[in-house]
Image (cartoon, rainbow, N blue to C red; front, top):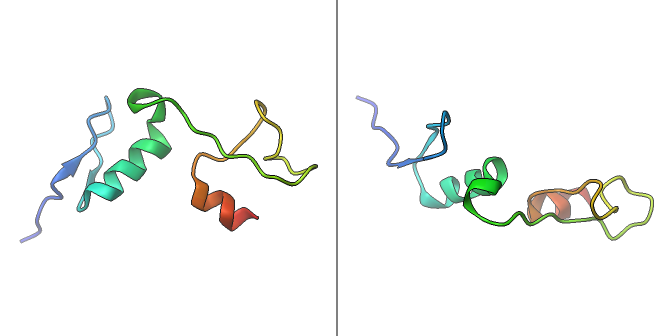
Length: 69
């Protein structure tokens, strides 16, 4: 028998479930940030990068920016 993950996203029409709270928190910050908190956008420190322009583009997770750099 398969167990149901205990942490379920409350965003309307989402309903994704996660085994760990940390995974639900990461999902919220990535997919539903506007519903749960003020957005934090990371920008590249390198001029000319498409993710370096404030207000134009950015990355929603710091770990993804570190991987990009």
